[in-house]
Image 1 (cartoon, rainbow, N blue to C red):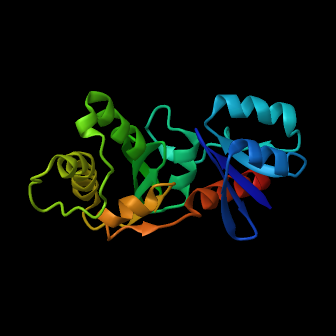
Image 2 (image 1 turned 180 degrees about the vertical axis):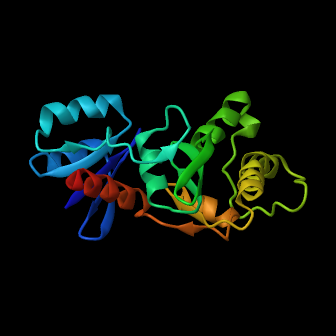
Length: 208
């Protein structure tokens, strides 16, 4: 079984227990003629799949998650299905945070991704064009501009996640998972969480 999670900029493929990150074009060119179960939040990529990959099976309409949230993206839904209890953080082009309790989605929020946040500072002034320091200590006030930029980006992430976490398991996925893990050492990186949710969608459809 081949599973594919297509985001705004990359495709994440799961096959034979291995997760592979590809460009969307590479993924389509290599697997266009295979049977692939997929979810997609990228409308342009979705149109290409319909044209180039007729064997691909879209799971985007198989909603299983119990939630009152309106407009929850299918990628977030799949990640939440992969976690019964805890906080799910997907750190990609956007950073999404979702809270799960006993299989029920309680709600969540969205930040721009780390690259987008860094670019926003750089557009304000060249003096704020700084690399994000995920090794920065967040228990004291910064005394240098680039540290202040990193603090301004990272400290709210840590504070809000811990405020809603309070003893819950924290699961990280996405391209910037390692950077977030550096400031949230209690979190666990899980590259397969979305794919576990997708497998639940497939299994549910087979039993209907």
